[in-house]
Amino acid sequence: MIKYTRRGNIMPKTDLSWKKAWKRDWELYLLLLVPLFLTILFKYGAYPGLRIAFMNYLPAKGYEGSEWVGFETFRKVFRDRDFLLALRNSLIFNFTEIIVSFPMPIILALILNELKLPKFKKVSQTILYLPHFLSWAIIGSLAYTLFKTETGMVNNFLVNTGLISERIPFLTENLNWAITYLAVGVWAGMGWGSIIYLAAMSSINEELYEAAMIDGAGRWKRMWHITLPGIKPTIITLLIMTLGRLMGSNYERLHAMGNVNVKAVQYQLAIYIYEKGLASGTGFSRATAVGLFQSFVGLLLVLASDKFAKALGEEGMI
Image (cartoon, rainbow, N blue to C red; front, top):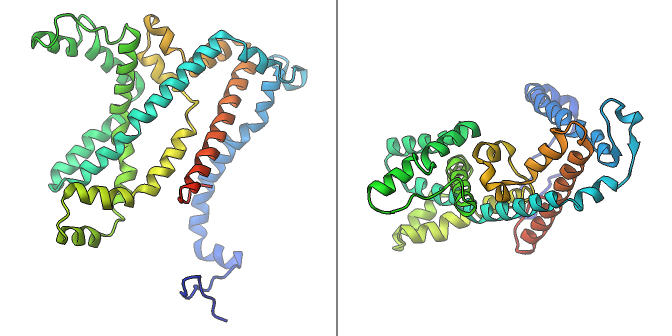
């Protein structure tokens, strides 16, 4: 009996026998076992440890000897002024970073896609991808070299060219530090982020561009009416994933670029978890509670954004 799809195409016959499937593709299944094992071990294997959030956990006593306190740890965390400060800063910076940083890989991918010289395109891509492979310790050192108030290259250039009369405290004043922090993040991440969009653009049918050129469409119209709609599902998928990290923060990045003068804006959840949880040696319950709270809110944001995408007619992720 021949089966058809909804569009009338003949469906290929599939053999559901796992023995034949294993015999045919056993190499692929073996390769899949490695990342599957690592995911189970380091992601799902850590789930039993979440009970620490509901205990007054002491490493010396272990799980069995530590006292169950229910939601008391969460109550203490939510009443902590330092937590409220870290939560506020994390939300402000992450939301601002979505607005500023999320469109940049798209814009960069559109520009790279329009380059016609292959050698220049490859060199540009290599230079733009390089910051992704640098640790935040190196990026932080570069930022201090460039943006120091007295000896920084940026201030020296601006003063010597007469563009400014007084040096700008990029790293020691709250607002200037916040702008510098976001700008360095854009520089470090936009090159690598553009790879996914370039891959999505490569799947767009070239005949669409040829037809548009025949109809007299210029470069901007082709980008607006062909390229952007062609990568729209990719943009929505990555946006949903980005919204899931709205509560997160990067300790390495904050530590590499922070100083005591900007603690009011630098203090985010990653620093709170380290200082109040891990560094104290006795705050494991507090650190776990904050991490669980971040994950729960992130999950809600992903589900809400996925539902909103489906309401707009997109497929979503779930």
